[in-house]
Length: 266
Image (cartoon, rainbow, N blue to C red; front, side, top):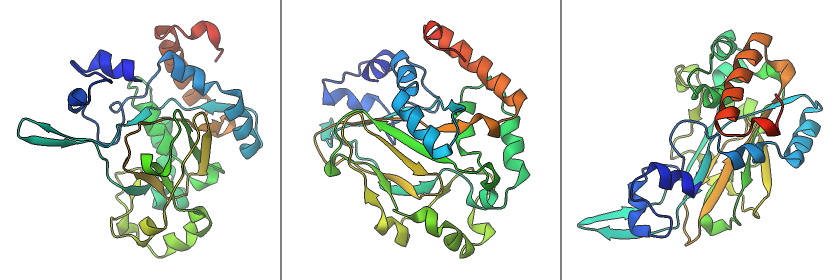
């Protein structure tokens, strides 16, 4: 992950905090596109994660996502000339779907998904949020790559929100949701933000949550790095054949370009 930044961002050095401002990232993400670095691909092949999600879905035929990684830099405020630079992110909670479209099973959601061509790699990010209730269980997850304490910032979740999701939605108007977005950001004064709990994790651990769960992140308040990789899976039976073929071909191209093709079968 650090090597990727150092290759792509001139003068950035993981060892020199005075260079960290060269990397522009609001939430520790490496831009908008998914990453296909060799080790990230290895992590997506984790048998432990696959076995866990197979049990959750009660289905062994799954497709893994291709997403991004996340780095929270240690809390620092540096004087760079006359400018103060801070790497702290903002606290937020959100849903990675459009709640109105999800709950009303709007056909438009699946129409948009099925029209993805994966000629643009951002389609791998877009597909994660194109879910509707009739698809059944939908989950999200991340693997933690460093010990992550309460102070190090990172994942927060409103415990049990998926159990009151329908009740919450009934209090909302359709106008509360931007029909152009496949997500929902809770306002900064939301009572649910006060209920969100930090999820500290050991290095190498994986956390999974129902996609209806309000979740987000808190800023890093420590001198440690927070590092994680996003991973989710979906049952193959929820995907149409033409969509699977387009996606598989796009994945194959990335596996070949990243010297991974000999280690997997699609």
